[in-house]
Length: 75
Image (cartoon, rainbow, N blue to C red):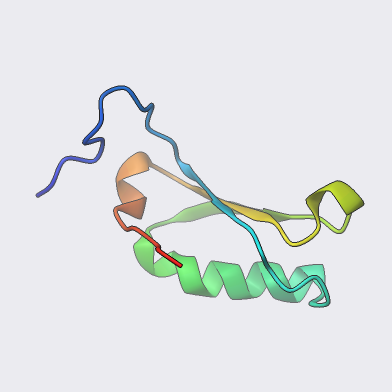
């Protein structure tokens, strides 16, 4: 199994930040969709998404533990 934190200078984190999300999708639907997509990587404690001007198009997925999200997304 690969190391969870390959770079010791970066702290481990249980939260994934997602941006560039469609702002026209309703918050409840967005949260359900993100939960469905990311639940395959581990137990999710919470999905945070807001409609405020400062947070539009952004979300945070909080996992139960650090080892849950051993994946890399490149877009």
